[in-house]
Image: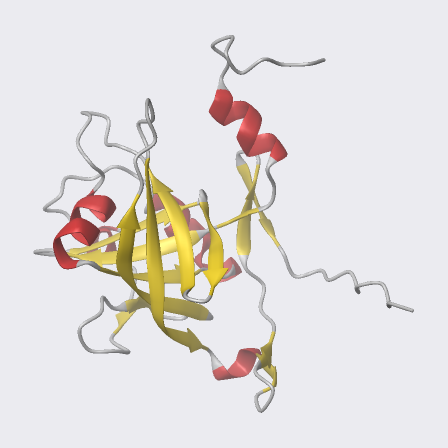
Length: 194
């Protein structure tokens, strides 16, 4: 079957099943309270400068999601990579809440302050990136706003290191597989070059 995306298809349904796995960026932002929301349209972009891209949709009323509104206002966010024990809270934190309501309080998500002048990180997340807004992209006809953030600091839990001197580490991140989740802990060794 060959599908033509100009035929008014359910693009999201098709893309989320084929472009897998999609890592989860659990993004913490701040305004008058702390907002925490997961995004699976999220990926590393460049290593020099160290950037990532995340695509942020709108609220059901058409306004920007709190994550985007807060990043626009403060120019900062903390992107955590959740682990298995955080799956339930991470999943429920995707629920649309009023701007004045904090997901941290509503879903009992514990936070840690690691770096001044950046939003807190989710306590227990094995990896977190402390980022500044670098650029917003406009895609004609899109209801999503892709933003590029530059990584200023990175946190890695000490228990993840396999060789701290060489900065080798491993952890079991959560990713989206279609509409469900997967833990990505199983490694397949890379073939040896001859």
